[in-house]
Structure formats: C-alpha cells, structure tokens
Length: 382
Ligand code: PMP
Image (cartoon, rainbow, N blue to C red; front, top):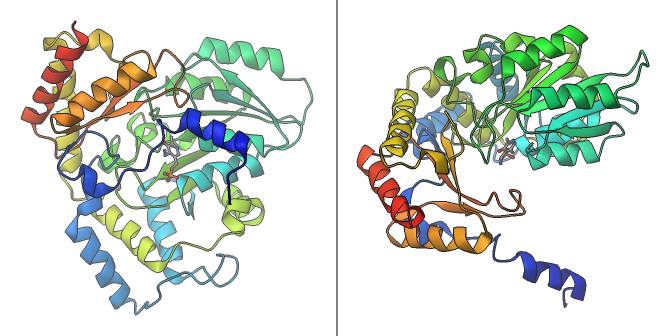
C-alpha cells in the first residue's frame, strides 16, 4: 500500500538525517559515536555473569510473560531494585523498560492539572513527550540559565496553594555534553519547595563514585525529588531506573502507564543489569574514560580547536559546524578515514547549531584521539 502523499513529502525532507545503518557497515571504524562509554556492551564478564546468575537462580524464562503488575514481576526485579537503590543512595528504585519509558511515564503521571513544569530548552525528547501527555502546563527556560528559569517561574506560576512546581534538567546534556549548575538549581528548588527532577542518562557510569552519577559527585543526590538513570549508555545494556522516595515508587506503580501497560524486561536483561552494577564496583574503565576526556580537552587546546567546541567535562563533545550539508560532508570525510563520528543535524539540534558529536570511550587510545582531532583541524581551519 502506498504511503499517503503528505507523509511521503515529509519523509523526503527528513530522510537524509535519519537513516538506519547496520553494524557491519560500521564495524571497521574507530568508535567516536556510541554511548558505550566504558565498553561494557561487549564485556564477556558481564555477558557470562548474567547467564551464570540465571542458572544459579534456576530462572529459565526467555520473557517476563506479562506486565510487572500481573505475571511479570520475577524475583530478579525485586533484588535488583534493592541493589540499585543502595548503589545510588536512594530510598527506592523502580526499573523501567527504557529511559524513554521512564521519562514519558514520569512526566505524564506525576505533574497534575494545575501544576507547572519548567524544563531546560534542550531537554530530551522523552521528557517533552511525557509533558505533552500531561494535563499540567509546561514552559521552557533557556539552556542552563537559572536566571531565565527564575524569570519564567515568576511569570507563569500562580498563587494557588495546591499548585506544585516541577523543574527538570539533565545532569549531562545528550547533544551538548554540558551540565547545569546543579547546586544552584537545588538551592532554588529547596527555597521554594519546588520538585527538581534530573535525568542522569549520560552521567551514569561516568561521574560520581563508581559511576553513581553527577548529583552524587556533587554530594546532592538526596536533595532532588527524582533521578532518572539509564542503562543503555555507559552501562552498555538496556533499561532505566527512577530513584526517589518510597511514596513516589508506590505512586508510579499505581499510575505510571508506561510501567503498567507493558511487558516487563526479561530475566536476562535484569540479570545483565545486576552484573553491570557488580562490574561498576571493580572496573578501572571509568578512570580510563576520565583520562581520555582530560586528554581530549588538552588536545583541543593544543590544536587550537577549543573555541569550536561546546564546553564539556563529560564523554560528549560537540563541534559546531553550522548547516546540515556542511556537517554531513565533514562527517563523511572523517568516516572515510576510519573514524566513526556522527553528524547531528537540525531539527534534532537547533538550526545553525548542527554539529559533529564526539563520544569518548575508555577504550579509545590517545593516538586515535590525536589523529581524529588532527583530521578535524584540517577541515575547520580553512
Ligand atoms: N534521557 C536522555 C538524556 C537520553 O539521552 C536518552 C537516550 N537518547 C534517554 C533519556 C532515553 O533512554 P533510553 O535510550 O534508555 O530509552
């Protein structure tokens, strides 16, 4: 059957930006693109450990068999949520099938009609989608700009006693790699009793003790209303967790539709998550990653590239190259030389802010980092 004409037209406009590429096409390229910051996705120890755990627990099921509210809440879920809560220093943990599900579920279920959500303008799509499904109003504030947040709150809140205010940000932004001033945000929220929600997707496994997250590194993890940590980036597997109070967990179990109306993750995924958390406590990959981040930043300086990049202390570094065609062309040239660096195009990022996104890993060598930046310099220093 033919796609309706108007969809076909939209597709033609977009298609260059979103293409599915198979792994085999990319397999010989040096990875500056995946979110597998620590190399955990191909860890044999984790893979075999998960299998072993299932054998030990005599769990021989390929699937969860239902929603966690029906038949899907297998015993590994319960013990893994306890491990996660302890590791992240949270009262409770609730696992979701993905970060997308966690954010959509949280923001569609928690803020109520009459409440207001203030969100950083670069917030992840999953949070935007959740807010769209909510009856609460939402307003954006300028990226990492707390003064603008204060202005928006002043302008858009009302005096009603039962209005709750939620403020949402990421501890590491997925496309820019930068971070907000979390301590100031927390102070602001505490002063007025606002609920701060922080998506730690790209900080998990990178910042904090053994990769707990950036909030923990700053010593403020117990001062936010909820944290969302995902397992599909540095942890190399799949799923996500919402960390918060026992009341919040019970509320989500009862009202969060992306939790209720879906089949739970299979035992194998949960066993993998457990093994990943064991690995986090003994790995030296986080130190190697941090070393590479420092080295990358030094190389930017020595190659006179710093001003081209968005300032970042994380594993994500964006080199702004304005215009979809320009950035695609340079990415293509760099890929031809063997480095997997992805162009990030508008409308994923604002027009004029198109960029090459470098994701760093513990397994990138210093030579690879120097070489790819040397190459980049030849394109941007013209
Ligand atoms: N939050 C952020 C900040 C992300 O970057 C992503 C992944 N792109 C998600 C949430 C969604 O996580 P997942 O891939 O587990 O669905």
